[in-house]
Image (tube, rainbow, N blue to C red; front, side, top):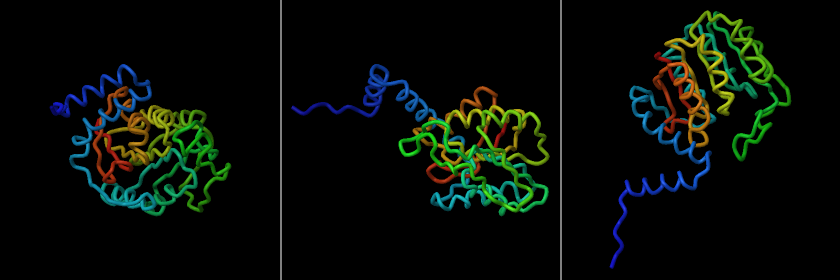
Amino acid sequence: MSQPQINVEQQAVKAAVSLLTQGTPDAWNRHYRSVHFQSLIQEKSRDALFLDFEYKDRKKLYQCVNDRFIRKAPIDYCEFGVAGGQSIKNWLELNPNPESRFYGFDSFEGLPEDWTKNAPKGAYTTKGNIPETDDPRASFIVGLFQDTVEEFSRNFTPENRLVLHMDADLYSSTLYCLMNFNSHIKPGTIILFDEFNARNYTDEYAALQDYCLTCYRDYTIIATRTDYVKLAIEITK
């Protein structure tokens, strides 16, 4: 006699029960964040532009955002996680408006904590070397975010549309920067994420959701790679 087939809903319930009774807190978090992402993503990206590009071609996302949404108007661009400086240099090139200002935040000593198996503490270090640029609109703020971002934000007065580039990878770093910039974030602020769904949505995505929940914010996705790894959102509330 053949065994009765278990339908998809029963399998899901069985998996959830197993997770609750045997799973670790990290496993619970990954499951929750993944389910939460799936429940929101269709609504958030309903009017998004979907782009197909490889990691090395991520400048295509920046160009799309600059050309279609910023339209080369002056911006105040803050990048959290600069490393070798390729992204901020891309933006300097894409947005030549003389009134734009560009700020790069990084310790240039690598990640402050373990991230993935292939990116332990210290990964992405430039050994203290700051990217070179002769563009006077660019400034680099050197140090751990926890040592630099709060003071910068307290003394910062936006003069143009704010564009934040979150390339900090870690949940802790991403959330810290968003929270400290909350007083400057307004409807119309654009935020780019470089590893949005990393580690089952437990880093940049999770940080954005917790920030929005805490500060009563909302957003819509305006442009994204088809797999949602790299994307840009616009704050709507």
